[in-house]
Length: 340
Ligand SMILES: C[S@@+](CC[C@H](N)C(=O)[O-])C[C@H]1O[C@@H](n2cnc3c(N)ncnc32)[C@H](O)[C@@H]1O
Image (tube, rainbow, N blue to C red; front, side, top):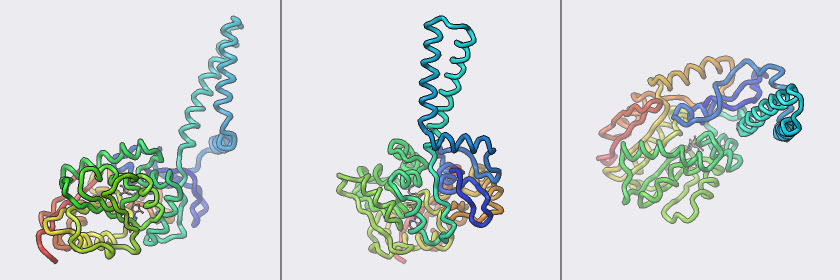
């Protein structure tokens, strides 16, 4: 989720700022998204006025381009004076550029600031972010499109395969599964894939994306943790692109529960933005600078260190706890070899 979208008003100050949140995480995870970090300097008046005008009259740039193209062709065919050929040509270049720029800008997704919700109301927060399937997909990868969503799954799937393996006889659980961005790719490679999440809207989009797969299951969590899942029922439990949105105690809660829910020999994979990596630190430092004066949205990502994540794994009872640095991510893998 780059430091991202435009235009919510900070409740505390009334200053118009750019939202940096969900997309900042995705950007840090190597997923390309929109433009830069949050800024406290509002757009210039001229730019703002132009933007409102274009948003209200979306037909303006393409129609202007068409008119200029016709004028240019007519001027060339009629052999009109040089200034009319050059003038219409220049106007054509300008409006073509404007059309492209506007088309890109209108694809920008505006997320609600949700400053009225505390972080730990995870279900409500993420239901609001995932109000439509397009928004739900964008909340997972920064783009509402199915193609981009699938491409964005490649890196995390590769990490899973390389670091913990994905086997045909595995029963796999993802907590914080979102729209099943990863599940859709893993389901054909394992025995069963289960996705658990607190957001009903995220799961509704996940269900739409998984038709025809008879080895998948979606679980709407009623509260933080894996209480609804049977002990010793999975071979691999992972969570990606999710822990950044949880407070530390809830991160620990999930790792502790994962130990119970895994079978003997089961593998764990968890990741977060690495505070100790250059990119992770840069994202954190930028966010700190930009958000210093403001209330932070409840979905603002917070990074981890390898020490933090491996402490959870060791304390839960896992062994072979390993820290993998894949900037901007830190990934911790571990194995359950004893019963609690
Ligand atoms: C950025 S999305 C990532 C989804 C998915 N892991 C992926 O990589 O596509 C974060 C997901 O975590 C879920 N989530 C947030 N807090 C949660 C919590 N405390 N328990 C379970 N899921 C949570 C959200 O509903 C959302 O689906």
